[in-house]
Length: 340
Image 1 (tube, rainbow, N blue to C red):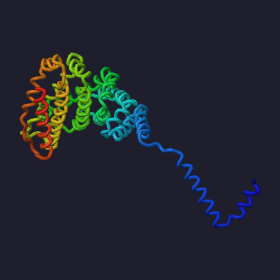
Image 2 (cartoon, helix red, strand yellow; image 1 turned 90 degrees about the vertical axis):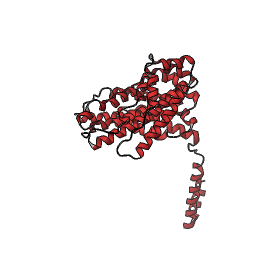
Image 3 (cartoon, rainbow, N blue to C red; image 1 turned 180 degrees about the horizontal axis):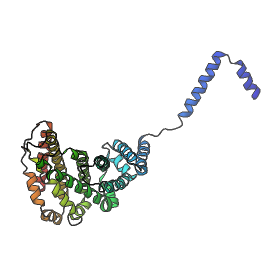
Image 4 (cartoon, rainbow, N blue to C red; image 1 turned 45 degrees about the vertical axis):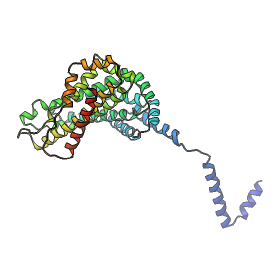
């Protein structure tokens, strides 16, 4: 056999050598065809597991933000079946765990406007909370049955309490600039570092609450949670903000702060619209007892009426932002009319 191979080798010329090489390449190519590459559902599973493992194993803030960025990229789709699969693989559990940790860090910060280090730290912490809430809002575009299972597993005992904290934090921050900074003519620039991220977090947070509010098994729980605690937050969020009618501001208020106040005005309109959606879904097909509980909740009807009859003010720097404010406000009126 060895002699036969040796003879074959000796009989190969230059051209034959190239042919032999080509044959070897063809054999190698043929062998690779038998090694199946992950495709379809298998590929989705691999990618989802990698992202979820990245979230679970992230320790430092840099690692956590990078893992959350990957998550929001992967979860940014509208395929109900894939979202259900992502939740089955543990995406909601991983995000819920990280949300609890992130909120524990934000609660350690105070509103020390003179401390630049706290300013930067607070902004980073709320960026993390915002990204987590965004990822949660995405994956809860899953099937109704999957959402029900997730609500029973982590929604009742873990996620809803955390989402309430997000809403409570936004309410506290939103009210802060109205205290005395405008009246004193001081610049509100230090407040810019947290407001955008907190506002986005509460918008995404209410979207998650709304995904649960659509469930028959969750309506009563949300309405009666901690003696109406969720209703209290929703009532506070839907009330018109002081900046909703900003036709005039004191001359002492700096131009950049007027623009910032207008931004806040647009964002509060967006938040109000999302909360209106939650209330509409809570009342839809709810039991008579649950509807009465909403109506009897202190300040709820008054807040709904005020928000539904909100008159639009005209701010300086009229632009596309005013259009968004008007659009969101009109949608809120429509949804709240359905509640009433």
